[in-house]
Length: 581
Figure (tube, rainbow, N blue to C red):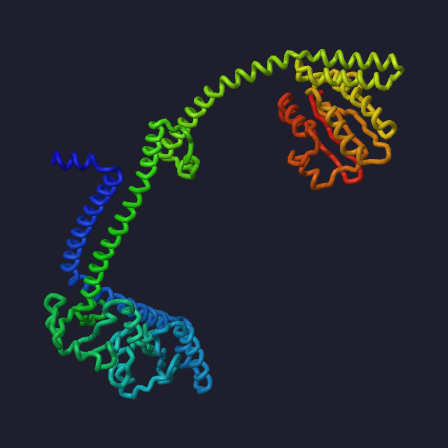
């Protein structure tokens, strides 16, 4: 036992899983097989009594149909209209009137028997020997009709059943029609219902083993079903009387065993006998046993194959992880091979978490090694850049001041003005002290930029500024309006021959200040405008884009602020800057 436990503990996980599933399936197969054998043994013992119960149920189904026909005969016999018509026959001597009354009775019978599939005919015989018939006409002899009348009289108003004979293959339900007016109960006619009894029996027995065997229904010594006598030879030769003792018996016939059952009905007292080949009962049982056995073997093999695949899928990631750990043990911290779907998939079980955690650990270790390696280089580069940064920007400003002084000395006011504006723009753009400035300060940057561009484009640039003094105290990110003016010059003014009007104006809406930069340039095509609004439009030049301005406004003031672009082809462009007001 200790050696077996030790050998099991040393097995690989996939072998352990496969062994466990195999053991469970084997135990389930053994328990299921033994249970089926026990169940079938019990079934074999109970089969005989169950077969007789099936015959009893079939006889009950047939008897129920007989009861329905009995109720139908009672309903017809007590029908008020039929009774009144039968009573009125004695009041007329005219044969035509009698014929008309019998036609009314026939119509009433058609209403009752029209939907009954088992009825051959409905016939009412009145006291004047006249007939009202619904259905097919009977070919019975006068002697048979007298016998039916005599039999119905024995019932004293109840239904009397007359079994089929050589003359008529129909089961007959006969009943006297008695007048219940004033409770006299005098006979006023006779109702005769002829029934397809074979159809009733065939319908009830359909789908049962009795349909495949021989069934005989007898009333005393008279055979009711089947109507053809050549079908009853097997029952007669086997000897049904031997089943009277216990209700069933197994009797041989022509070298084959037959299962013979017997039951007697309570309602009509008929006797039901069935003869079913014994092999027909047990062939299906044996076949089912074999199907279950081989089916379970097939399922066992399929489950074993799935178990092997399951165990392999379970242990394969662990084996890959072990192999990668061995590489790390050798000093290989690279992520080669760890970008495959096996490492980056969204598998959320324990193995998946373990692989992702190991990958993140290797990535962090690799980053730390790379960081420590490049740290010294970064320090050297920082020192070098710091030395370069010691070149004071005032050197550039002093140079511009010298140019400005020389331009004034030589009587060049335009150059002097451009140099002064350029110096202001450089100081504003290089200064990093404040990320947010006032609208007034931003407009100063804009005006200096416009001054330079006016020298360039002269009369082609027409600029207008309509911003109130109270609005100039509001805050906005530095270099918000100036890039918009630059875009108007770049995309509108440069592509026009006529003067370009650029205008900055303002409006207020719900505690918001809206600064609008608009031009009368060629505008933006609808498709390109949609891309501009989404921030995916291709840009030209190296300036500050609209998405940059949008992001800085949102970062500074939150959602609800930013920029909005409106444009129509040939109608110019308008960019609204929305800030707190």
